[in-house]
Amino acid sequence: MSDIIRPRIIFLLIVLSALSFAHPAWAKKPVNTNWLGLAVKGYDVVAYFTLGTPTKGDKAFSYEWRDATWRFANAAHLELFTSNPERYAPQYGGY
Image (cartoon, rainbow, N blue to C red; front, side):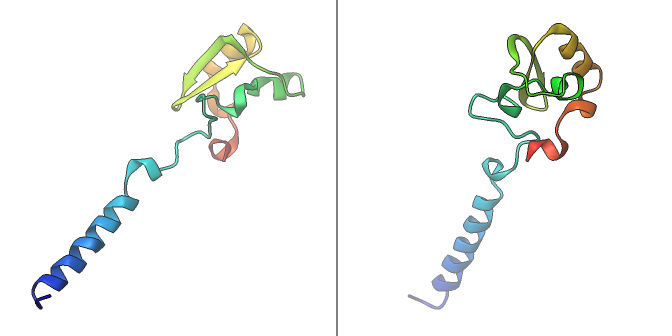
């Protein structure tokens, strides 16, 4: 290869490599979710505070927040969460 082409190819490979790591697919989502997009695997995060026990959420009481679906056992828990999500959501997005 000529002395002009080799440095250009190396530069191009470096740029393409850097761009591949900057792709949004590598970025962390704000909330850790399962493959269905459920936060905390569908458990009611408010129940940890009110009932002191893990409780599965119901599809009927769902809420979208930070690109995740949050489920709750009842309407009262859904209302508590929607009024102050930061209070009930896991720290660091559940990571």
